Image (cartoon, rainbow, N blue to C red; front, top):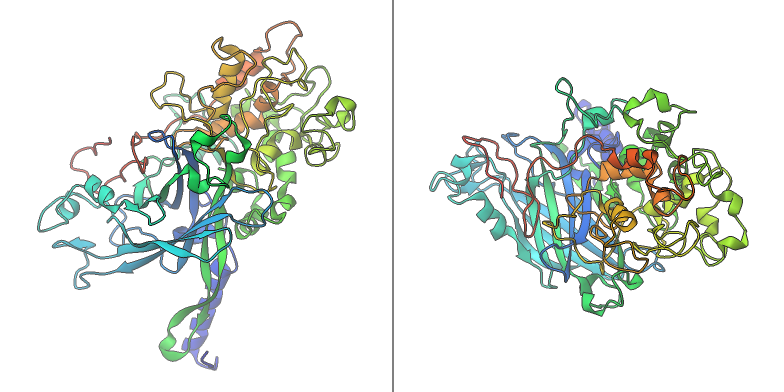
Length: 583
């Protein structure tokens, strides 16, 4: 390492620039600009993670990690692309008793200018900022091995002269570029890295105007998808189930559609090297270990659960070794619940008026922030054989008399939900929430950390099924409680059992689902009904009806999705002579 003096003014500037970069990047900085530091480093910013049974192939799982938020399609002349000297990683857990990843996919990207003599990104069939990648894989903590050595990222979808025109441009259709960019890894996975339409949808303006959602909308102030016509950069993997299952089993070897041995946890991250300033010519070099600057598992965790003072810290940590337990208080007493409670700030956020948490469910259980929830049952023999028993997970699910949502929200984010009492549908329970009911979920992987959890044995719901619902497991629960086809108490496939939070499909309306969950819909689904329930009458009361009818205003993506891998839609074109056809 070169030594140098700080007496030079030029060198002072370089040193201070490096120090500022250390603060912004190496000083640690997932979702769309959700944390203060990562909002200054968009190339390393996770936007969303998806994990779902491939709808066109029951023997594979598709995992998608998106990065680089709010890309304007016309964002030239230096169009968006993956960053160099960043490690983009997809992390997979399939065992609860190991200390870290069981499988890791690592992507590193390199840029090249084919024609430095022009200011155009594409000219005369040559491409600048042409990006390639290496994909490496590590299994069970072993060394990383390259499984794609020369992957190609398709050019940005600039416009028809740059892409379609022979001679002047690349002379092909953009969808052909996408197809040509799909690689088959040496270990059997399909891999795609490239720009795509951002499939996430949410009324950003309403959400962050102090929760001013616009579920009803109107002609003057309608709901607006804050991500409409923006692009992201996608890393997509289509992976045979046997490569993800801990014992190498295929789907056909699953004992049931809720086989506990087929659960995986998924999260993604980006890491940067620490930076030092070198003396010779004022060059800035990159050195040192990689440090994680962004991470994402469950959607909206850092964006809408973790408070602003802890967001940057959240991004630096892995969900292992108990790291996430320090944030448990934000799930057991979530801030959003204060705006669904008329004794707190419920009146201040009228758009959430349909969501009111149970205060006296079954006559006495109060799930508002700071209240006991089910804690009065702790140690009671009625809990024997349930997940709430001390011999099981009572210490986590019933930790004290002031953490009411440890019983429902915490497991959704930190452990997954087991197929054991009381986490079964109220169907068949005979009015007792602690009784055995209809099984409908098992994605239990008790690592006590935030990640998407998916049971790979659950079949995919066909996207053209009349009962397909963007409300995921909430939609499945409604069918299991009210539709005669599914109201027997036995285990059977219910449409949307493969939906969020059992993994996450591209179509899932996670904003509405999570708001409904904070509003107590999961408690109601397992038999802890809303306050207006009258024993002997239908549990589908006005309060429950209000929750199920609630939406966050924007309920689907602004364009279609593709029927085959990588499923995300073609990126929006920077120059449209005619409206882009999406198919």
